[in-house]
Length: 85
Image (cartoon, one colour):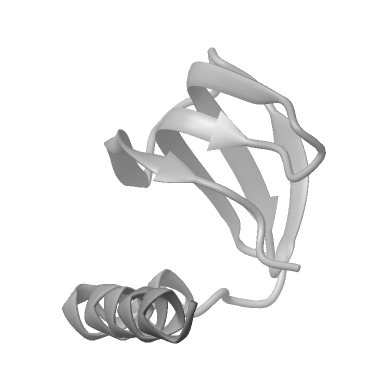
């Protein structure tokens, strides 16, 4: 039991250390600016998932999800995207 916890903790720390700088630090949201993000897989935080869609963000809020939105400002079409709680 104790070994399992150590392995889980070690794996979690490894994942955190290998992850790049958080997305929110790389692309700070400008107040009122519209940004279109292309997502390969979008997890909605409620158990639903959508493939190959685009997320429209204004400021720091998600305002819509639309597969046809353009132009794409940030291409994460090979990544999984989910909202931050």
